[in-house]
Structures are given as structure tokens and as C-alpha cells.
Length: 138
Image 1 (cartoon, helix red, strand yellow):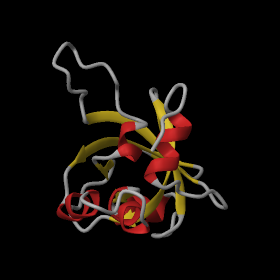
Image 2 (spheres, one colour):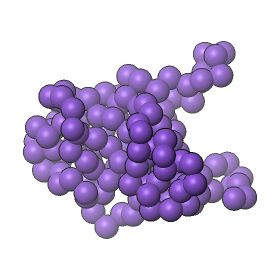
Image 3 (cartoon, helix red, strand yellow):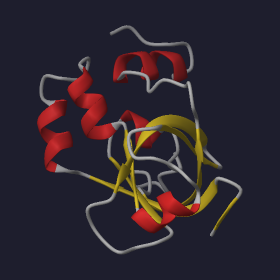
């Protein structure tokens, strides 16, 4: 599951109350990063890979990567499972294939979580502008 500061985990995403509140008027504010630019990790997994809550980590899948803040999961125990609230940060690493449903799968994605000291969690607007092909205007 983990070795050498690399956590191999199963990502699930979903809505949270905090993410829902922050998306309504705070997309360009630190409140949205705090609500959705985080990965919740089981305390035993944080300890196993020597990651501190509040530190930046790189979440990486076969579909992309994104820097987010690590957070101690308030649920569980559930070693090997991490959670990122739905939003532009999670969207960077979920499978974009929708299997004709128009909605990608937001559950069961293999990811690695590694420390990313010195890296910054981008705000939603900057993240979207820098990762969208051709960029977008806010």
C-alpha cells in the first residue's frame, strides 16, 4: 500500500457541505481551496508515508496530477482509501471517459499520494486556466 513516502490508494470523490457552500461565491477565494483542494487521508496512511496534515502533496493517477493539501480524514478507519471533494482539483485526476453517460466515474481511481514540499495548491481559476487545452477566460 505504501513505501518510501509514496501512498498507493483508491480515490473516491463526492460532494461535501463545505465544498457546496464554497462553490457558491468563493471559486476565486481561499475558502474554495480549503473546501475542495484537499485530499482526506486515513491517519494510519499519513503516518506510514510521513505526511503531515496541512502539507502539500501530489495526487497522481493515470489521467493526470494535481497538488492539493493533505488532511486527516475524519471518517474511517479506511486505510488505502483517499477522498477529494468534487471540483477542479479532483477533475484533474479522474478518468475523463464518460462511457456515453456524460458523467465521468468519480470513484475507484488508483492514485499515488507523495509529499510535494514547496509546491503551491493553485486556486480554481488558475488551475483551470493552466490545465485546459488552449486556456480559458475567467
